[in-house]
Length: 231
Image 1 (tube, helix red, strand yellow):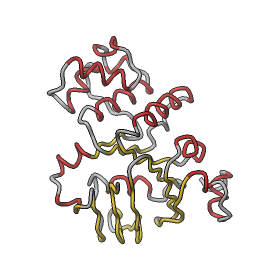
Image 2 (cartoon, helix red, strand yellow; image 1 turned 45 degrees about the horizontal axis):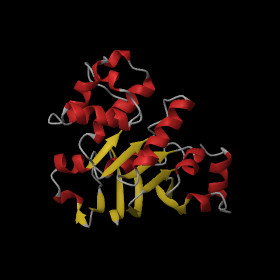
Image 3 (tube, helix red, strand yellow; image 1 turned 30 degrees about the horizontal axis):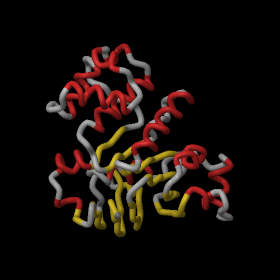
């Protein structure tokens, strides 16, 4: 099923164009947006739950213009986890309930279980958490709204390798229930999580396919990106 359909999208900030002529279809499952720093990956992701709006072009979500959804409703359907975990002052339980004040104690504990945190975390202060634990609480908070799609903007960039692997496994495991759009500039990560891939370069879709095909490409830009020459 198609989640997003972007047609001739232009977008940017302060009269500077970042994305130019983007045409893209994002389907169920895991969809990876990759490319070097400054290529427009995060800008594209922000368009998908209207953190920003395009300067021109059309975006559909579930075959309906994205602007037809009230923003609050859209952002519950299309949740987002940012590059750096942002927690509110207070307990883990309070942070989860900020997103959904109606969840039960059992549901809150189940969310912690989903992100591989034990029940005793529920009463811990935000100040007692490591960066990896804080990122998992942010993920639990986003999952509390029962999103249809999860947007991930470099969600493991601030984590150590062990925490990164844990987050990757957690997200891959839930991708059969919740579609994931994952921004990364790490080729190795894209290969581990699999799925469909779109590579952005200089604000345009440079390549699209599946991760296995990426490594076999003869395209010089892709080769430079894979080798680390293009970052």
